[in-house]
Amino acid sequence: MTQVTRPLVYATLGAAVLAHILLFFTGLPLPLQGLAVFVLTVVVPGALVVEALVGRSEAPPTPWEQALYSLGAGYGVAVVLTVLLSYLPGPLTRLQTFIAFDVVIAFAAVWLLVAARRGPRLRADAAVFADADWSTLDRRWLWAGLLTLLLVGG
Image (tube, rainbow, N blue to C red; front, side, top):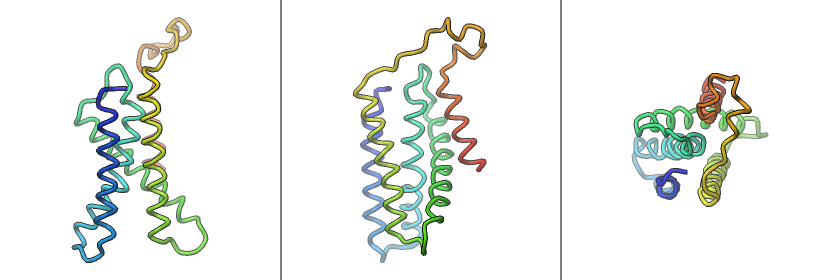
């Protein structure tokens, strides 16, 4: 885990709480409410997912790459979660949407904090994958790319 994991988790949780506070005040202008929804549904889940997938790599992404991956992953999470919520019987309520995104955010935050507490991951022995050219690369990049492709392409 990089040294930035815990502050990132706490900052994203703080941003989510601030977005909830802004959304509960219905008298706010619509652009401000839209920004709060964007932070709650795209920015926060995306940042946590990207940190969980590639934050522990030997060559973590640059801040610009991290931001781009976070927006892409967050958009994918928002689309997939909203589609899954649409299958619930009855109309989709504001509370259901809040709870669903809060569960995703809480799960990702707990996952990151537990992983940070455990320490560095053990790597597979390179001799096992000696015949593959990409064995020296961190496979989390592959999983991050596949997850992004699945979420955004779906």
